[in-house]
Length: 57
Image 1: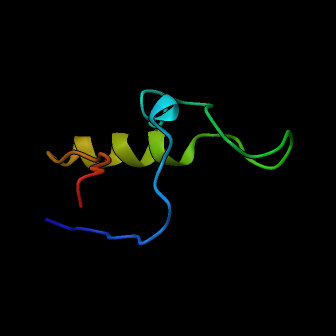
Image 2: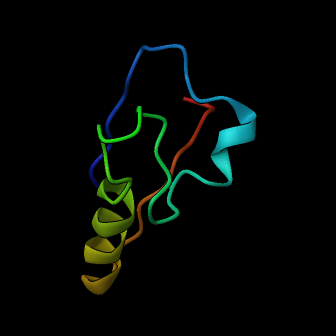
């Protein structure tokens, strides 16, 4: 298990359902493709793992 903890403000509840979707980004037009998390999740799943967000930590 790999666990990453971030002490930031967290992610808005409205965004959580879109977080791992391809092409979803909060960046300005031309500043991001929105593929990072979806590609990362696919790679992790191909190796038998899972990638997600847990707001309880």
